[in-house]
Image (tube, rainbow, N blue to C red):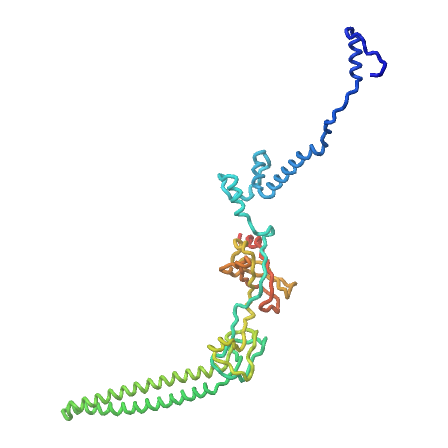
Length: 377
């Protein structure tokens, strides 16, 4: 109120009551100090916004990882049904939702979306042999050089062993001696047989004693045994000759099959050991490889093994010929997988590979499952 203003008036009258209400409305009161300011509007909207973001994340997770659940909701709310050719749910309808999710995780296809299987490996020659000398000898000639193409039976290395040739001559001499002994015993047998015949005639006429006849028969039996022994000695001499000839023949080392000389360790003048000792000492002469029947051994992820089978086709490319891809086909799968790398090895046949392909070349493969499925239908 303003000073000097008369505040006494009669409130019993209508005018007095109106005046009192007017004065009360114009009075000033102290503002309390504990009055709190209203919260900002952003703080009040933070909780609903976080809740909305959480719900959107859950919905996105369902769409990405559980498409079956989305299809169920679409079916419940009258969405457009799936086409008839859609893949059937591999989990039975009678299972619970938890069982459906577990079942779906076990049958999820690990093959990439492009339906391709890729891997890497090397060119391999399945037919390869290391050539050793069967018997000891000194190298006198090398008829094939590194990289030469050889035919089956072609001479590769010639050895010399005087002992083997002497053994052959000795066996031939023993054979000649055995034949002479056999001839002498045959002559003796003929004589005792003639004597036995005369004695039997005399015995029939009682012109000789019984004892003379028995002696003639015994002499004939001894002559027969001598001939048999001489014939056995001659057969043994024949066997000794064949053994000596085989040893001499092995001094000429020949190619076991047609191929290419991919390694050469022999040198003229070197003395090589017999095979049983050469293998232990790694003293080989050379290596022959059949370069016309090459394959590829490639490793692929073991998670793709369910889709792999013999006959599956694809393409391969060599690091040495990156611009010349060629067709391959799976011949067989390795019986075991690699625990260290988590891969399985495939052996693949080659169709029209690049000219100049060699063993141990690095290769990359790609098998297309769609083409394989289409060819089997």
